[in-house]
Length: 157
Length: 157
DNA sequence: TATTGTTATACTCTATAACTATA
DNA sequence: TATAGTTATAGAGTATAACAATA
Image (cartoon, helix red, strand yellow):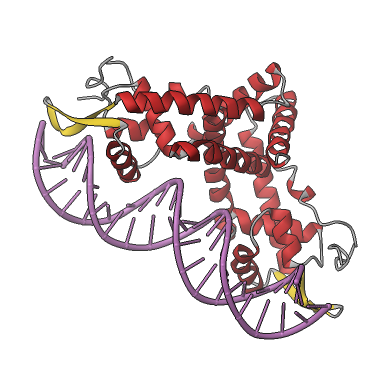
């Protein structure tokens, strides 16, 4: 027997009641993007967090792990496994800073820069396909709205 | 010493390089909403998954746990703890269905309906504040864009 | 005292395999 | 055989406390 017959109303069970909530729609869209992005990065041996780390290190050569953690909005302990993995794979270098021997200066290696270029191209292609149903105006509106929501949340007490 | 001086470029370390990526902006916005929503529901003893379950059960009285799992897009095993908790707190009832003794019919109790009404009001107030920086058009665009992205992802092979 | 990197730990969310009882 | 609910388990992701080295 197909589902739905046991409900009092005998109508199809849906998530319609949750659709008016922004949070629910955002979670669903995020789940789709997260899954697709994971599948895109997996063949390159990367996860979202390792890809993001490579992007930020590439844009800020010589930064410390604490600075990287702040830029990525993750706690410092959770970055240790990330920098360990990237170092072990020879994608980044960690060099002591003479002026402050507590910190490491992070930089992309040649291999890291090459992999980042590959991954960036793959992610852009992936996002282009997710954008397929949206016009240029839609994209601009979407990014603007997301930024405003993020600012509202982080800006409150 | 303030940060940034150890980088090669001596500029402030930011996530600017990640901003062009839709996925990154969506994750940040989702993190904000998730945290705020969690804080909103916590005083009521609810989490996102238990709140969502109450909403769907309230809209589809008598549905089965499998139907609830499908509507919420979570795997069946992960719903067991949810229905157990809601049952233990007297917020939902689980009654055997005579026509199919494998399934339970889920319904809100009076207490469950009361708590759901409270929670719904709180969540709506919460979302209104997150919407504060957006116009009505912005909101419509945002929900439409999120739905399109979700459809693009779920509709692919 | 404060900060960097680290270890240990824990909690949430989510996914899979396999069991039971029913069908 | 197939399905509903369940158990056990494992993997991410994320958070806090506390430590050693350094400032």
